[in-house]
Image (cartoon, rainbow, N blue to C red; front, side, top):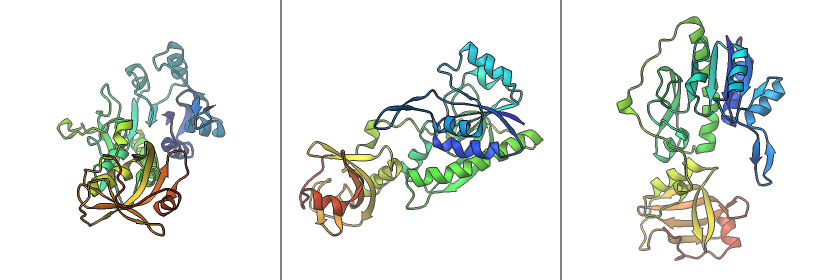
Length: 310
């Protein structure tokens, strides 16, 4: 089958690699324009563009997906199918162009977690499993007819980084299986149950602010869902501290939530929450490298009774 692949971040690279090495023909990729990235704000290509260049594939980078020149160029490739992984919302003129239409790989078990950040929100909400779904694109985002699903277990120590990497690999395999099934006619698309739909909206800065009045388990799930990036955070003396890893401790204390109740320069420190407490394992102070909470104690003034604001 003749494919055009659309994607932008690292999550999509594994899918492109697998399709490129399959029996199907990847004609070109479509990705976002180059932009400033990283601390130096150096203009650089997306992960997908870089991979496409390494493969010798044409990389289209339209600013406007409805642009006439882009549509004409896309039509020249005459794809049988467009495969989308972690890209922008496609206009109807684009997703209806191939004879088989366009399919998307989504990192949840649709209709749960429709939206931009399904992996993050599954962890933040304390799910013990999530999954991947392939579906045909339609006018409303993440609502098209489902082709295939695959469950993915969420381990107790998974964070966004580890779960992302597991789903990246599993998703690539599911996408290839879906395209094979479309080609041989074995798949029967099924409509989604909109009643069962939940949302996974785009993360904002406010999403990551830790409220120490919440139960320790709730805060730990927030930390897991945002680690290693963009990070759940608190403040100390107006300086931002990103908490990257923590462990729930079954402990009560006669302190206000957010207060340090244990501080040991060899082990680290523990913060009381609205229910139970959190032993902080790894963190990143503003402008500093990632460190253990024990290292933080040795470099900063941390004592029992100090309190992080809620």
